[in-house]
Length: 105
Ligand code: FES
Image (tube, rainbow, N blue to C red; front, side, top):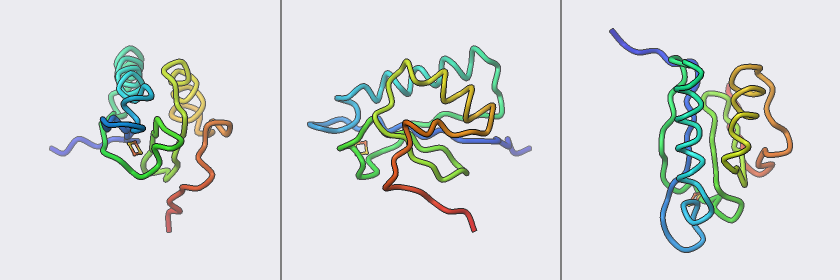
């Protein structure tokens, strides 16, 4: 039987000069995994992802299927994103990347 998730959290962990990993992207990914596990959110999947071209404002986090990009995410921002966005349905406006969005049809 297929596993069905409510949301997928993509965290950019790409290595390299100026890329998200050098700005804490791996720690952000790890913090999302810890928080999701600690809260028992079995309908949320956290995935590492490669470069999306937004590392100038990285670490980058993308929430699917909402089509929203977060920028300059720090591990300490993760609980707020989980509580407000993932659980509460309200994006954390101060961290949204205004240049990137997927608009669902
Ligand atoms: S390395 Fe993360 S967006 Fe490019």
